[in-house]
Length: 213
Ligand SMILES: Cc1cc2nc3c(=O)[nH]c(=O)nc-3n(C[C@H](O)[C@H](O)[C@H](O)COP(=O)(O)O)c2cc1C
Image (cartoon, rainbow, N blue to C red; front, side, top):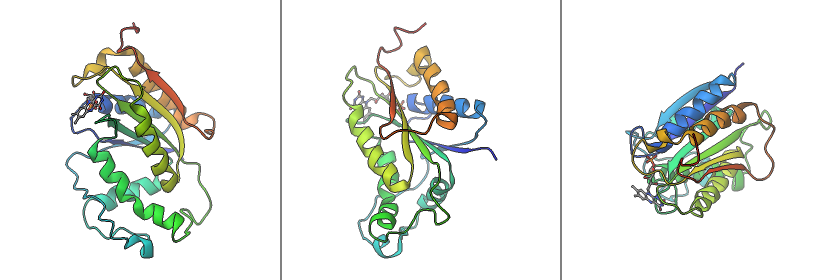
């Protein structure tokens, strides 16, 4: 059966830069034989974690909104791609809402000591796409640390990063040939590459597209 890949777009902008790169990554994953699903958080109602700690007893979040539908997909897939703009050095607020609600997974692992998959560990891998407007290159670290912590709770190996700076206007990344090519290639790598090591492999496109043809 084909591997399944879930791509989650977390930008507030429709067809924004991170979203466009996500679509490329999913196209690359499909070219490697995977079955892909694109999901945008736009229009979904996901409330902030209330820190009620109900999940410390049950392993389940008790807040009733659109989160459970996304959560079920997160548990089911073989590969995950999170696409986020850099907002004040961090993931988008939309991404953070989703990540924080996965506190129930942290509770399952570290409080309840429940195996995520009782039938045995699965080969699950994840990738972060992060896009920023400025020339700064150190701002991606914050997103990577957040991702690392989230993926540990959600039972994914952190395989890949694609970081692109100096793209600000909506759709500007379509002029960035190198970033688009890397996205396509990394989508295939996420599906059929070697098992990741302890650190993700990071591809940086930091020239604003000027160095690409
Ligand atoms: C609220 C907000 C905060 C931002 N913070 C940063 C930032 O800290 N560093 C940066 O380089 N760009 C920042 N930007 C610019 C975006 O990262 C940039 O426009 C990016 O291309 C947006 O990606 P998107 O089209 O996928 O939404 C910010 C934009 C917004 C709206």
